Image 1 (cartoon, rainbow, N blue to C red):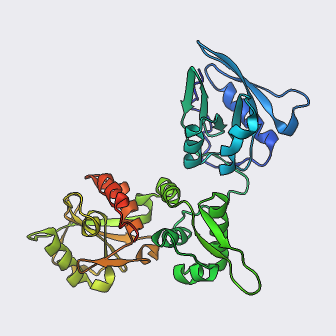
Image 2 (spheres, rainbow, N blue to C red):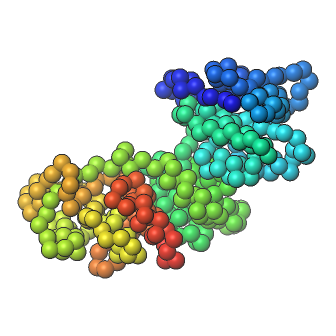
Image 3 (cartoon, rainbow, N blue to C red):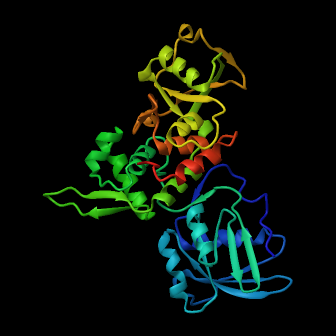
Length: 356
């Protein structure tokens, strides 16, 4: 059975794989670094750069035809219809987690150069998770879940059935036409959104979400709470969390405070008792504006959050007399914290009123 080495690909820089030869060379190197396992054979006359992977375990010996693909997409899920009963392994420089999960569910063998390897037969299962993201696919220059680009994703998810023109997306998100265009192109390639009407001289093209759950899941995988926020914790004397939230809103200005996480989710769809109040601030407060709160290192009942990107203040809403960030933002903010945050996030997402 293969053992992916923990020492492989130690370089911190990502490497773009631009050709099938480089892809097969990289996979050969991966296999050589294993304690035991497969051998890649690249015989003469193999069409389309295909090769064969020969591997053996204690119970099984098998040869798989390797199909290299530089640009992974959901079209790979059609491979079962193409192989005609052959034992095939799909090989890519990098496979996104969501696509790999779908390939796994479909029983399609796959691997990438970052350490991912899935081989399944009637009597054998080999399933390795990637060790790191070192290798990337050619043309993978844009991540639609960066702080700026994710404004488009937030908008699309917050209005899941609405159709948008590119100019409407530009105006609503405040990012450049080029960034919106690249983001839309990437999301279409991933089959997360669709063009519902082509554009011409007379009408603009229209776009909308076609796979809401997978789009939100892929954003959740890429989201890094600690890197996109600066948090200060405070201890405040208050009879209850509603009183605490009212104090924060009144002292810091209603136009400056937008609640998130447990308190916001509780206002939208009660599930757990909120352990504290957390809110984004659209501007940093002056010291004299916080004379009613004592800053603490941890254990505070009030979290004041300054975001790195103002996109969190887009698609806001009100509930119970308080300004909240969007349901999508509340969900993402809860998924990466403790105190039953993920439980509350999942309950909010499963609620019929989520993003509605």
